[in-house]
Amino acid sequence: MSAGVHARAIRHLEASLSRRWRDPRMARLVAEADRALTDALAQLGVLTEDERERWNARFAGADAASMPLDGELHDRACAYLRRQLVDGASNVAGVTEKRTLFEERLQALLETGIVDWPAKGGWMRRLDEVLPPPVTPFPVVPYLARELRAVAIAPADRVAGLRVTAVELFDDCVRLRWHLVVDEDRGWRDRVHRFDHARDLAGAHQPRALEDNRGSAYTQDVARGGELDVHHLESVPAVLFGETAFTPHVPSDATTLTIRCPGGSIDIDVRDAARQASDATRPQTQDGAQHDRSALRT
Image 1 (cartoon, rainbow, N blue to C red):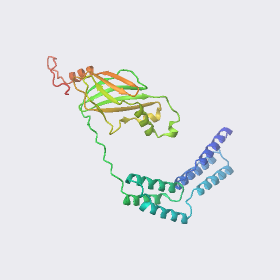
Image 2: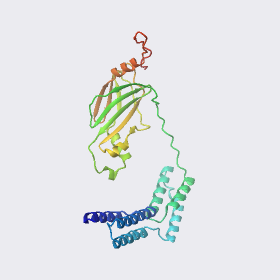
Image 3: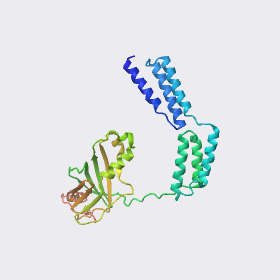
Image 4: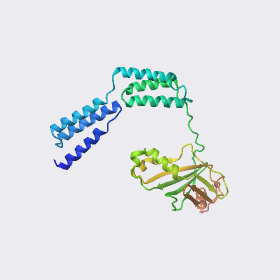
């Protein structure tokens, strides 16, 4: 076995040993996985038997160091949690704030190994009994987007990295499809979850307002906050795809839409889209003539 492979294996084991988990359950699972890895490396000839035994002993020691503390300390922690559950947050206003304070203290005891996961589950059930979580109503989406009447293709302009690719004209809303090209921050994965990163990017760059040449008033759908392709962002960190909806629908006599973005504005001519939608609704007669059956309704 080459010295390079052996050195890389040792560096990996050292890094794994340095990433110790304060949660006892996770610490045990990681230690078991590490010992299984050393066994596999020994079978492949990357580690000698002496090295395997030394590493397994080190991982076992790290596992033992993360085990829960003595029973007396556990009993004192339970008494502390009972007091906090009854009156410890009496000076905090609001059910949500009281629950948050108790959950933070319980999580701290879990991470230090004084309380284990089954005990945490029991305390959370008691918290729900004493302070039931507030019921948050599901946001009402003000449109259904059932009938697509026309699609306007946007120009190939990019405003501060944002390009609107298409405008979908529905019977009760307008949906803007866009993608954002940003300077890749190679370290964002280590700091921010991809869902939070996508929301941050969308919040800073996505369309904010919609106008037309008739002066219609449009409202952005903030109930859903737009649709973001976070899985694509994970594989291609410099490109975010998304869509933003506005209500109500675009009137049939509107000719131009103006999309306002943090970096500027984009103008889109919707006349061709309206004509194509109108032509699509005219049935053909035997002599090839078309009869207008319906036009875009306002």
